[in-house]
Image 1 (cartoon, rainbow, N blue to C red):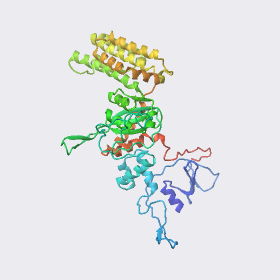
Image 2: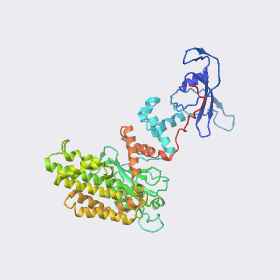
Image 3: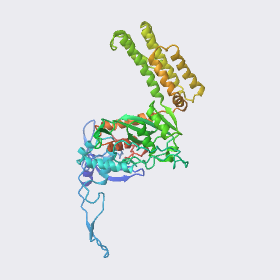
Length: 495
């Protein structure tokens, strides 16, 4: 009877538990038998029978997630040591003294929030405990994973006279120089960050900003920024390394300066988008590292230039925004598509439409050609070409773009702005083409972080927000909290 009740508790009706085995990988195998008193029924004729033909084994995967009330009938023991002041104590077991939630339940609730991205409120409602109990369980799981987030007290701004930490500062590589910036108040430096060769820096919007009134000046100051900067291992698989409020140069420098000098010295490249603030931060905090611009943002900038030209000539022609019946509006998606991805029919439609538009079509076509020259540069990347390009190839592709902008497209302001921007970041873009390093890891981390934000319907506590996002973005660096179970098919399965 007890084995049948246990099977029903596990969601296995019609069977009774015979044996439970713990495998070497930590997973469990449960052996069950058909419940006593059952009769087989032929699926064709419906005749019942108890006559056995042969034994069979059916292996399948089963998942159990059930909240139960446990009544522990334990004993209070008497201490037999005459020198001990304690006269009695209770037996130790799967729950702490006075706790109303078992340790295994705490781990499961914490992993549901962190690994399965279930909202804290949903887990608390399903288990029948408070929100804070589930949140504390996740905090303990994150702490065991090495993720610690101190309470933030606004954005960090170094005081006047403080110098930013440089790898060449005192205590960095042993050479004298500037003093290191101390760890910002309220923020804990990473205890042991993994070695990183390519560091990715990117930003994302965390939510609404919060302000507080300064008691001394009476003015409103930002307490929580709407933006956060993330630091990611762009060349390895260590995921999210840390976050900091804000996206300015000072915010990024403050986080990098708080890390171990030996860790900073191991960074060879830093991948960013075309952000002048991040470039200034890397130049100040990591002067030995070489900057790399993500090529996706370069191509994206060229595509935006084509859209800007199309919108400008449309407004100049009609005095309004583009509409469905406008020919230049009908080819907007063809202009964004790569030249090699255009079919013969699509290419014919694009060229004929641009020719019929006259001067407006000439300007749109010139912007489109400039975008394709940028894509020709990006296609030299080792990830696309399959081999590392030479510096001569990169220089030739850049020269083709600048020559086109200075001759055929010299009267188009959007193309001129594009060429000037690429010229400003010429060294970093060329380095990205030669090395193939991108900021894809940071972009993927931002996607995961935003997914956490949506699951929780937003965060008001920045510390909780950073803990949840860092745990989620680093899941690939940890083993699965549930051992993987594979049901091996058996040729003797009876269905």
